[in-house]
Structure formats: structure tokens, C-alpha cells
Image (cartoon, rainbow, N blue to C red; front, side):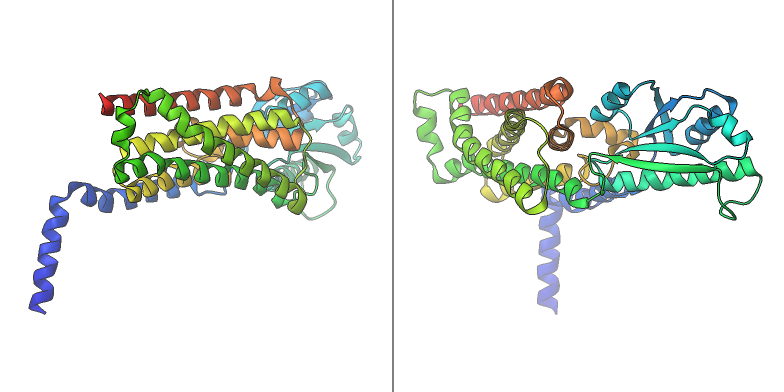
Length: 370
């Protein structure tokens, strides 16, 4: 027992002296608790709501106010035509469109049942299901207030008619598969290149590269090209398999899809090269690559948990997560069939991320070789 305690004291002193290990042991669990605690939430808030009020009466305004004051919905637009609804849905600027028919107030006064249409953005099946539940509850509650009776005691005057766009059956596979494509592609690309430069360091061949008449930029580009080709073929293969096995539709343009995937992969490969230029061993590079790709892609991209329901501080962090933009563009292309005019902001963000990480990786290597 004395020998074991001696070894324990020795190991404790080593841990205290190794500030990096001590920091990981103390900081990483607290960091994970904060991220998971705030991001892991199925509760939805600030759901973007658009309203098509064709009656424009006091009764219709009362119904709109019930949605806006419920604590779940945020009124972002008032629409007047189908084209406006298409634009809002395609750009993800509205999750729900409330359509109030003409003659709404008149029919209520006469005691007639009035249909209220609920148009839901179904590209995220889990979110759409939750939004539908909130909306149906609000409609039923307002109908009870109009009739002056407890909710659920008799047939209601207001009849909600939900209509789900892009994913009418609310199939979870159509929602999850695009996220899995982003998740798998990101981890594969980052890890593959994260080990490349470190492998050269461990084998000692990096010194030969430094002595060769080649610049840091050319070295980074040369390292990226083969991994990009392999990752692109792999990514497209995942898309095809998803269509064949899981019934994922392809309503948009294949060239646009290839462009989107290419920009995403270049950024992921650049991130891996940046990690590889900093790490000294393959073990450290592998662990860092997993941490930098797994956690942000799974937690902060909107893959599973809606970004709008996260705290504002975390929402700001998601703007530097490339999977956020890729996932938005991918779902828009394959599920909605949109064109470049809709997804160009996401493509610009992916291009900017790729340029930044490749520039940082080149600058890091240039400084090391100087």
C-alpha cells in the first residue's frame, strides 16, 4: 500500500507540473457541461412566424396576437401572396405561415366553423412536429375563448388545417440524412489531413520538404488536392447511397450540389491542415481533429438542435461553424430545389472559411520554415 501511495504522490506531482494535462482535466469537463447544457434542448423559442391575414379584422388580429404573445413565435413578416410564402420558406425565414381566410370574423359571429391554414416548413421534421403542436394548441385555446367554454369540451369553431412543405410525411430520415452527410464528410476530411503534415514530422521527411524549392502555399495546396479528390468522391457516394437507401429526394441542381460539397470539403481539409501544422504528434492531431470537427458539427450546426433556441452567446459561436452553412444549403438544394440565388450567402460563407483556414495553415508553415 505504501508503494502504491508513493506512486500516486509522484503521479500527482507530475500532473500538477504538467499545466496542459491539468487544464484539460479541469477545463474540458466544464466546457462540455456548458455546451451540452445550453445546446441540448428540444424546447423551441423565437420560431419565425409569417402571417397571411386576408380578413384584416379585430378577430383575425386577436388570433395573430395570440401566436405572437405565446412566447414561442416571433412575427417576422406579413405576406400577401403565394410567391412571398415561397420566398420565406426557401430562405428559412419562416417556420410557420398562418393563413387566415377572408370572412373569418363574419363566420365566427354566425357560429360557423372556420378553417385556419398552417403552412409548416418541414425540412426539419422534429422542429416541424413541435411547431405544429404549439400552433394547434394556440388555435384550440383561442377557439375556446371565442366560445366562452373550457378548452377541449366540445367541437371548436376554429379548425386548424396543417400543411407541411418539402416533407409532407415528416419522415425523420429526410431530415437526418443531410445532417449525417455533413457530419461524416466533416470528420473524414478533417481527420485525414490533420495527420498528413504530422506524419511528415514524425518520419523526419518534413526537413527534406523544407529544403526543396517549394513554398508553403504550394505545399498546402499539394497536400489538399489528393484528399479533396478522395473526399469529394466519398461525399457524392454518400449522397447517392442516401437517395437509394433512405429515399432522400434530389429536387435541385447536381452542379450546385457538387459546388456546395466542394467548398465545404476544402474548408474541412484546410482546418485539418491547420491542426496538422500545429500538432507535434499524430495522437494529438487526431484528438484535436475529432474535437474540432465532431462537437461543432453535431451540436452547433443545427443538425439536431435548433440554433434559434440556443442562448445568444452560442448562436454567435455557430457563425464560425462551416457545417451550419453547408447543412442549410444542402437541405435547401435537395429538399426544396432552390437555385444559386437562394444559397449564395451560405456558399460565400463556406468560401470565406476555406480561404481563412488555408491562409492560416500556409502562414503557420511559412513561419516554421523561416
